[in-house]
Length: 606
Image (cartoon, rainbow, N blue to C red; front, side, top):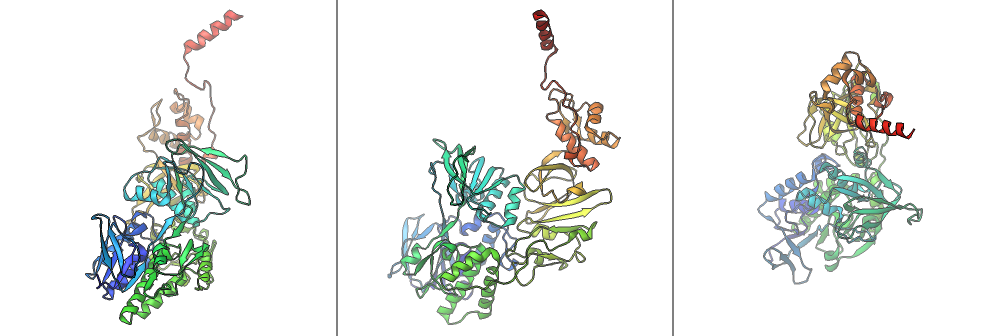
C-alpha cells in the first residue's frame, strides 16, 4: 500500500497522540497495535494521572484511552489495526502481520512513528521461573483488563511508581500485599503513592531483596534478605514470607529493535532505561523520515509520552506538507520542558543530556507551606503534598481560585484559606489522595473527610475503623456524610476526637451499625452500648457489669476491643488511653464438672 502518509507502530498514549495530530492535519494514518484492545498501558491503568488537566490529569488511565480512541476515530483518514505486529523494517516496505488471519500486508509509508513502548525488566533469583512469579504489567493485565486475580497474597519487588501503583490496585481488588521490598535506601516512586499503601497497612522494606521463591509446582513463599552498602545480601538476615504471588516491578527497558533495524542510532543511557534511540528536540531519529516517542525513546511518565507523541505528529505533518501549527508545537515543547524541570525528573534530564538534549531545572517550592491551624473551626482542606512533582489538578479544579501551584507545575500547592469554601473538590481531584478535609467542633471532636477508593462504600451512620499513617487502628468512628464523586474518589466524613485529626488517614471495614451485635455471646447491640454510655457508664468495667459484655464464652476476645472503640468514639478519648478492664479467669470456657473432678483428684492425693 503506497498511499500511506504515516505508519504509527504502537497504539499506546504516544502513538495515539501522534496519530491524532497527523490525522487532524489531513494525513492518511495507520496505527498498528499488538493488543486486543488499543491503548497500550492506558487500558489497564485504573489510577488517576498526575500532570495538568490539559493532558488528562485527574483522569483515570482507562478513561484517557477511551478519549484518545474516540478522538482518533472521528477522522476518516485514520484507522487502527489490532492484534497485528510489524515484522521487520525493509527497504522494500514494512510487513505487518495480522495474527487473526495469519496474513501479512506490506506498507510503504512516507513517515514512521515508532511508539513501541517498553518491556519489563526481570530479576534473577532462585526459582524465578515458578508459576506465580509475575511482572507488574502482567498483574495489571490480568486484574484490570480481564478481572482475574493473580493470587491472594503478594510480595511486591520494587518501590517505583509502578510497584506502588500496582500494590494499591491489588489492595483495591481485595488482595493482601504482605510487603513491598526495595533494594535501594529510598522509595523510588512519588511520596503520595507510597503514603497510600503505607496507610493501608503495607510495610515498605528498604535495602532488601528477594533471594529465592519457595515452592515446587507454584509459589508458596519467598525468602528476602537485607542488603549491605555493596548491594550484597547480609548473611543471617534472611526471612521467609508466606505468599502465593511474587510481583516484579524493577523497571522497564525501551523497545528499540525496530528502530535499530531501520538504521536509527541507538545508545545505552542508564538514566533512560537502557538502549534508547538518538533523536533531536523534535523527536526525529537519525533516519530522515522516522520519529520516536514515549517509552521507546526513554522511560518516563505517560504524560510526557503523550506530549512527545503530539510533538512528533506535528513535525511529521511539517515534513510532509511543509507547515504545521507552530504555536501549538512551541506550546507543547514548553509544557514538556516544564514537566521535566522538577526534582523527580533529574535522572531524565541527565539522560537526555547524554543524547544531546538539555533542559534547565526551574526553581520550585516543596515541603509544608500551608498553615491550616490558623483557620481552626472552618471546613477546609489539609494538603499533604510536600514533594515537588508535576501536578496541578487541585489548582485548576478549585472554583474559587484558593489553591495556587504557579508557573512551575512542580511547585507544591499553596492555599488561601480565606477564599476556600470547603467544597472538597480538590480532595476528589487529587491523583495522590493527599488532600483531606477537616473542621474542628466546640465539643472536642472534629469532622474529618477521607478520600476513599474502596468497596464497599460506607454509609451514613456506619461505624468504621480509622487507620493511621502506617495502617494501625487508631479508633473507630461514625460516618456522618458520604460525598460520591463521578471520578470514583469519594469523600467519607467521619467524627473523631480533635487530637486524632493529624493521625487518621484511612478507613477500614464497617465496624457495626446501630442494631448490629457487639457481644454475640450476650447479644448486646451497638445501640445498647451507646445508650449505656450516654446514661453515664464511662469505662469498660462499668459497661461489663451493666451489659454483661465479655462475660460470655469468648471472655471478651471478640467484643472487648469493639466496645472500647465505641467508648472511645462516644467520649472522645483515644483507645490507648482507656483501660481495657480486668482479664478475668478462666481464659477459656470450662465446665464445672472438670473443676469438680480436678478438686476430687487433688483431695484423694492428699
